[in-house]
Length: 449
Image (cartoon, rainbow, N blue to C red; front, side):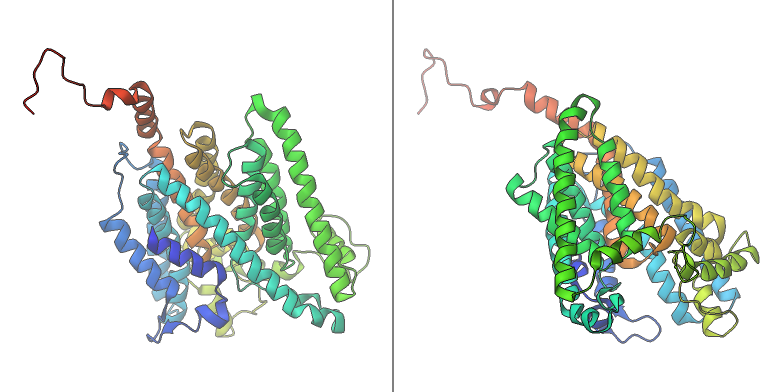
């Protein structure tokens, strides 16, 4: 777990260009950086020291086994096609690193959770990482805010170089603990921290992230037990109002700092996601910058609908000038996978999202401990959040796998060991503590001492 803790902390704060791409060993064709070295160490640790003790399960969940098999076959097909299409080794290794990280971290997440205490450790780790990520995102916004005032270039504060998912998931986790009274932190700490993480997650002004957080908030309310919905709904309404107030305050501060109307900007961004008619010919929609790239990826897949055309085929064709680089390849995760490894690979990556949704929801309801239920909640959130990113932002990256893949793997492990943990809890509660004490000698029996 120590390796995962260190790698997660690094992943939460490291800038992709200024840190991750700089701290690398200059290996030709496949530079090894902190994420790659961390992945190797985690895999070795999971194989040697990870396991299913002291809470054994009869078998690894069949859905996870199927997912790993499909991913393995898909990556093998994509690799073979890459060589047949003569894709450069640099492009191939880059996308093997990004796409191959998912089965690795699913397996690592499964093997590293041995007890409910391990799950608790990860929950607090996520909160710390969320706080750190929100801090670097807000710092990035603050340092570039002056450019908006001078040029009205809102893109100045946008960044894709951090894994903002840490902040978003931490915010949802803290909000859920407040609504359901499954506390990890005191309310006086959890509520402002949730607001802070949400503000940080939304600060890069990405529409897909806003949509993901909105859907996660809706999904959160569906996990409340029926017998607690009235009380929890009231608490949830209070939490939502506070979170909404925090976002309103953030927009107000942004408007005053930049002397620009951030309320109008946010409103325009939201409207651009709606399938409404354009009021003017210049009005942009969220999908405008993605349709051309999506069309090219569809053509690539249709040219080889069974096996795809190989890992990194979009980048290779754009680099060699065979297709136009519209700048949004891989933004639609489903079509990007189809183009590279066909329907078998697509099935594997879809099962990551679908499996996390189903297992996470079941674990929330059937988990015998608070920490296991909260891991299930995170897997459920990851699936909703990830689904929105697959549609429009690009989900299948190594640094996202370090978070999302691990959580889904942990959820499968918690689900598999739930029966053993429940039995252990029953035995502990059934045997009074005094029965473990040594019985005193009867009075009529002389002591040898």
